[in-house]
Length: 423
Figure (tube, rainbow, N blue to C red):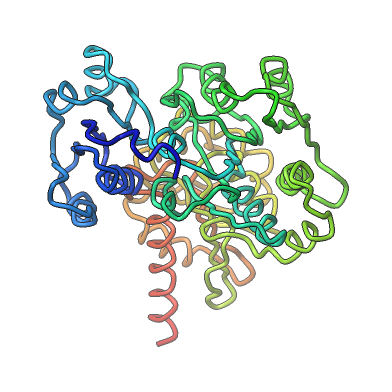
């Protein structure tokens, strides 16, 4: 570990007690920091998270944010889900406190080379594939960030010469200071999180922070087919490598190959990894078939573009389940690809009225109260040969802690339905 004394005896307040908050608190405590955590929720999930903290010396506040915890801190660590207009962020600015993200904490300490992946769609798949490509090349690699373990959770296992493949969101990039990946990759940019950003330019600027600290010894990999990203190349101090969809590969695979070439991984090894890859959980994951009806878990699809990709890659007629917390996106963009393939939609969550309005006239729309009701009614509406697709186009935070919990809930409901029908 680098800079292991950096946080010793410093007062650190962590805002948010989800996975990254727990991992960061535990790591900093072991490094001798004086750690406090403040979490606005006081619910079963928050109390379970508190139980995962490694010491009773870590002060925990649930159900509120106290100004004093920010005022007394040397640094404030913000979890990705905390909005930048929250009281804790405002207090940190008012008291002139260092305001950073969990990935910034980890990067200060990390001895390994970091490959950071961001973009509107495909981050999890590409991050996973780069990890598999490096493993195939016999490199010691850790895959973390918004996928799997938080960066801080794996840090103590890392050594010089290892690699970290890190999925990072625009939210995490908002509060970096010196985060400097050896390779930064921006896959694409489509309208997303416009509930958080005023416009697409603000969203793009958050993404571009991934390369703001890079120099000529680093690499920036950009999508040549995305004009907003290709234009950003002129702002980079690092070596820019463009990728484009290569014959025989989709854009995600082409991005992986571009990173592999920088690291001099043999093309044959990369091709083998890509051919053998079976996909990831919660991304076009086939759950089960019930009386000729397939159920597909695409809970990771939190944008309209992700849903377009899912619908385009399913050959059968579709009953769509969508909805959750609105992110300011335009759902009408799915209509061209969905109008002949989607036979009905069942909508849930806070965004169901907005989605229903946007998709009105494309196909029959049904608004329901729960995911279980959506699954049951979708099955009853389907015919043999149909697919019931959960592709929400929204974040999960209105009903679930994250997209993974939503995906697990969908799978349990579906499997319970199969058990009930087939005993």
